[in-house]
Length: 198
Ligand code: MN
Image (cartoon, helix red, strand yellow):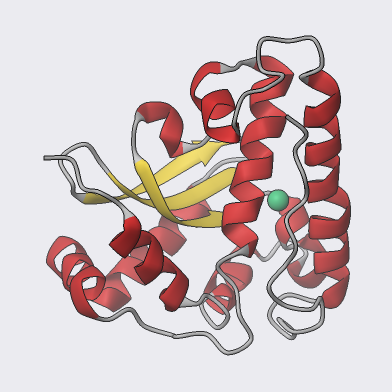
């Protein structure tokens, strides 16, 4: 199976001033593309040659896992953004966030804190755990919650390549700004499309 770089839903300037065109050109055009290209090379002749990304994330190790998970993570990340986003969730997801974290604003503070305190490179996540509860998670490097049987709803890339051109070392400022372009329509759709475990 040849893996492809999925198209962006926005043009590369559209997320400015929160994420610059230059960051999109490098992060999507170079980094995301490189993960796709590396994966396609590495799977040749391996047991994962015809595997889906989800199968790779659950079973692979080493370079195949790292590149496969990074392809999935970046597709999931970029798909969340819009220049005209819905800024707050509504309905069942909103209720579940408020039940779990007390308030929507508290959830934002807590996921930002998880992203800020993640040492080195990785990802901050909102996931659904095995008891159908919402949880904030950190994963290092290419880590992905699917590996642990969890269902990802939202992710924030905190590798330096995600923000360094725009914010240098100011990860907190990147995290504060990212909610201006995070489209809760996308997260609601993900939430509404999952089948909760019974
Ligand atoms: Mn990245």
